[in-house]
Each structure stands twice: as C-alpha cells, then as structure tokens.
Length: 165
Image (tube, rainbow, N blue to C red; front, side, top):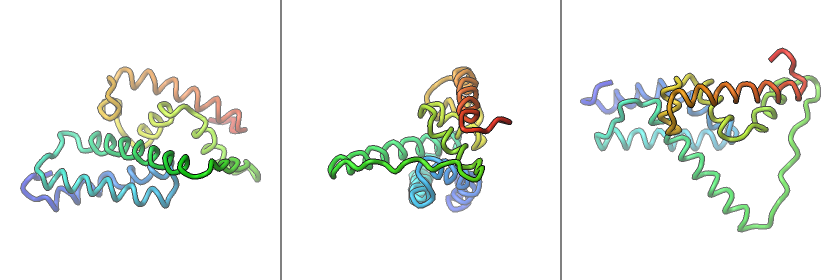
C-alpha cells in the first residue's frame, strides 16, 4: 500500500478488512451496532493515514482498535444500564426446529470472553502472530489458548445438541 496516496491506501485497507471487522462486531453485538462500530474503526484508519501514522501490520492494528472500541462500547452500555433501572436480559433463544445457527451462537456466547475472541479472530483469518499482536500475547500463547478454546467450544456445541462439531 502506497504511503503517497492516502485514498488508495484507505481503499485497500477497507477492501481487505471491512467484512472481517463487521463480522467481528456482528458476533459481539448484532448487525445494527456492528455497522456503527465498523464505520468508527474505518474513521480511525483514515485518521491514521491522514496523520502519516500507518502501522506495519494493518490487520493487527485494525483488530486491536476493534477490541478497544468493543471494550469502550461495553463500558458505555454498562454505565447506561446501571444509570437506569436494572432490567433483566431476555432469555436466550431456544434451539427449536433444529436451528444450528442458534446453537452455535449460544455455544459461542457461553465461552469466556478471551476464548470467544480467539475463535472469532481465527475465524476472521488472523494468524497466530496477528492475534498475538492484537491481544498483546505471544504467538505460541495464542496457539495454546486457541487449542483450549476449540475444545471448550466443541464441548459447548455438544451440550447444545450439535454432535458433528
């Protein structure tokens, strides 16, 4: 990506990463929030290009921004919910009619946050090195933790009735 043409650089980063960033936020918050948060990430990309602060690894940098933005979003939502009356969250959807997508979503949601993020990042195509850069851990730690996350996810899928996981 050329540093001399910011529009071309932005277009290339956007084309390469938007779908993965959007998918990450969809898994975390649903489609409506994903659209807004994805746009915020690419505003940050444009600002980085505009300030001539382009990272060496766009993919790791963008997903680090996505993790930070997700955490900020959760803090804001937590503060808003505690400023109002505490409302019971709706019950999780049932796995009626053999809808495996719901079972997968429930199994993923039941994982600890770190394991869920590892699986989402791996599914988004990040390498162990890129995930490590994003989460500030070594690539070997990523691989070790990813193995455990996969095992836990498989167990949760089996608990949801998905046996060919």
